[in-house]
Image (cartoon, rainbow, N blue to C red; front, side, top):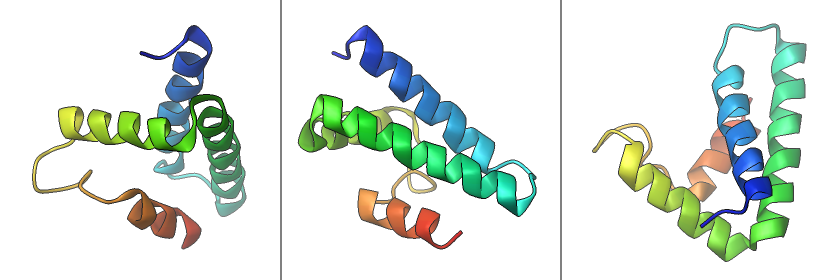
Length: 84
């Protein structure tokens, strides 16, 4: 169970993730991605990395389409964002 603070951070992560997929200029996307990583680190620090990974993987299993987008490991997601 997330605390109110952790829930707010997770909600911000979801919003930032959506924003990075929008058709913004590259400089805006870079700023959004940097903010995503800042918030993610803050959430990981608050929850602990293992608990964060368990929570995110649980959300993926619950909400992601099966056999498609969302099956990426945390490492694959990091590589995708690093390539932008």
